[in-house]
Length: 305
Image (cartoon, rainbow, N blue to C red; front, side):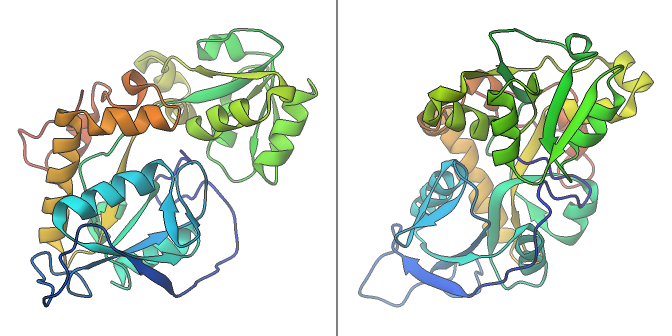
């Protein structure tokens, strides 16, 4: 996913707020007044904010599509809620939840202490692994392998900092992913850092680019101590973001997420959208400690397959 940590958005885009675009039934009972067991803004309705970014989130023909969208629809079904969708950008997503214009926002929001102070995070629906697109049949697995290479990403993405910290590497920053893929396919750069499912999606849709997706082995603690910006080459926890005023919704959504790990639904959805469950559905060491004592109890364990 777009790395979003400590208030940083993966994209640099203008603020484009839009109103709700419609309501979709997701298991809510008809013919009677909807209950408001989860204290949502509108009884029986889950107001969802998204930024279109396939294959994670998009609105197509009034229907939410993408990995995060599928997970959200499953949560709504299990909580007996309908869905209403609003389209905005990343800043609008966060602000809309914090001001309670939306009940939830989805799409690769990275957990951080700062954000949890202004809103509520669900348990992680999945973990975002560090991934890279590679051109030319080469194989790279560690940060050491990237030294001296031409590396690309989008301007404003925090991978810019990581790339700049790699000894001898040359940063190529682009205004959008299209430029990254064009130069990667042409061999002007050797490796590109973007969101993992976007890389997989593009690899499948554009075989002419002759690229492949590889996962990067996370830097060691010693490497990150020497190069603090290597932290952006490590996996991170995503979460669905909910207003402070809706703790019942957070608890209900988190239980649904945990149950989806247990019953195989999450594995099925991640696989559907091209992800490797062993990369996306297993927490890294130390992730639990990040949230324990912040917004989770001392014995909290991140969900895992």
